[in-house]
Image (cartoon, rainbow, N blue to C red; front, side, top):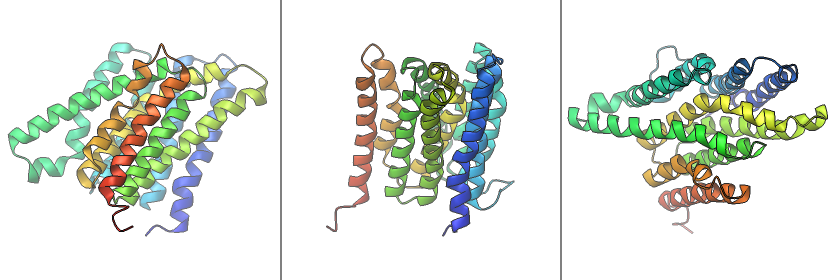
Length: 288
């Protein structure tokens, strides 16, 4: 059972830290600061704020990971540290995507490889998951480029993170649901600030802000993938729900020539269907 202090540090402190750093990035942006460094700072906003939430929810930092979710801390550090080069050098970004796609399932599912799967089963799962993760990493980046360059971007990922949290809660993993709720709080803060800051500064900088948000894609992608893998393999998240969450950003790319409303609507339908399946699987209405 989490204490009130853990909940405050885990869910309230991260968006406050996020807001302060994000406002500082906007200050630098209005002074023609280096764009690559600004994108890294945006990634650091999400990564640092999530790490604060992680430590708050876990109650302590486990230096030697015991459970799969403990690896999320280290994966976040890696993606924050390397994201400075992720968007600056295209080939470097692709190489990192391939390496992380291979590394993440092997690290997070180590108990399955050691105790549950045969060598052949392990290789098949490893190959399949690596392909799906690489696909998702690419789709997230494309979605940031094709969604309208305004507050729509954080709003969409606020919805995906919120759907993830609800599905995890319905599947019996409240701790993982709270980890996802940290992302909900962070994207809620980013969404509000992307709307409010340009008005406060009396400038039309919302488009520039949204364009810089692509800097969070490495950190965001790995965080979502890590939470989903933990939810599916170590909780009872339905496989169809996970797949619907994975492909949700794809609808932004598929409908890129359509209106903003259609793009958001298709993503919302995918997330809502994923939640609906989790509700049915949870037996929430069975005793009613």
